[in-house]
Image (cartoon, one colour):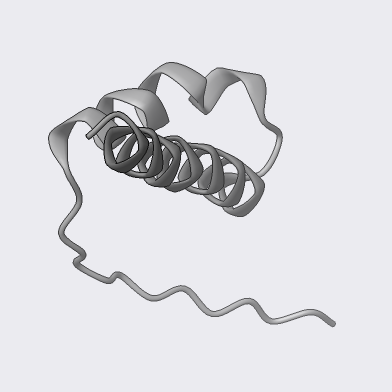
Length: 57
């Protein structure tokens, strides 16, 4: 018998990240996979923007 435990957590996220998560939700079969993929892409994009901004100075 498998017993699953659920926990509710509160986290703070940028609003644009929340919008991305909502838009991508239907494309993933697992909440965890969706959050991992979208967050990875979001933070990679943000880091690249910062690095390119440094190069253009």
